[in-house]
Image (tube, rainbow, N blue to C red; front, side, top):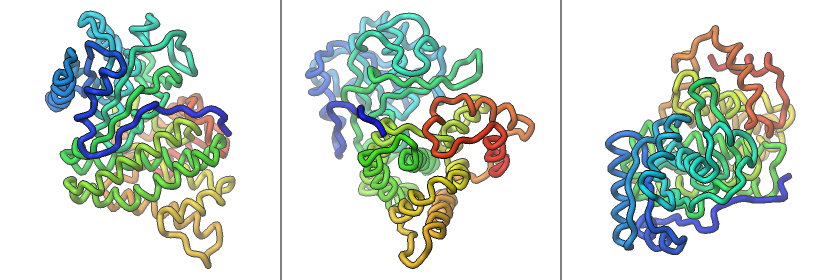
Length: 382
């Protein structure tokens, strides 16, 4: 059970929250921002929208739209170079988890020097980072509120997990009006990412009454709002519900840790460049089925949040109903349920399982599994 809890000191969750970013940036003492946005024209456009808000508040800045999906060490190095050459003194990330993780990593490198691999692991920084404002445009990763970043090492072809209290953003912004243009596929993938955060936080060996409360409510909100948001991206109430869900799930896992869903997911997305939420959606029910012998009580209780638990059913039956509800939600929102359909190769599974066994994010899993057990989970969903 954690005794220390991490979260941004200021969090905005409301329609029109973006318009308040300039005020808070000035309050943090910033003068010139590097706006870190997602790779491509759409990311550039989002970055420009944020920069306009900053300029209206009398601040200067520039946009670097170089944070690709599954951000790499090379992207971090490029972004750090841009931060230095532009004379920036604070960071604003706009986008999903990729942009925010990249901005966190840039902050580490421009402050402490070296390369981002130097910060892999737990609390490796030695100096305070530039202020970071995280403007979230997806409802899933929770990176806007966490002390975690995941960066791909292009030489080792592995995902590096960085856990450091100093990379927690100073301000998180969730504006549902910025999410209405998300396509259904991205809405579905990021929503299932949020669900995997909530469920893994809830069953983690490091869970506490605080993280349980956050994870339970996040699960409830996801089951009520994600199908609506996928069906109709303009459903602003559903978008608001998902903003709150992803925020709560992010706070939960940032303070309780994760488990084998993420440990198994990271090698897959690193090797095949797959969307994190899509892979998590495949793995989540299978991992929790593996956890069932040691987490039956919690999974049965969590089925209440999914509105599938029945008072006259046994604990095992309700836990099973919860697992089926996860599979049902995945199917309802149109995501794959098999690794083979994502292009994963069967003969890669043993090596992937070995990599997964080394992932720090798996340490919170309630049931310990051997490399062979992890490989079997892959095979169960192949």
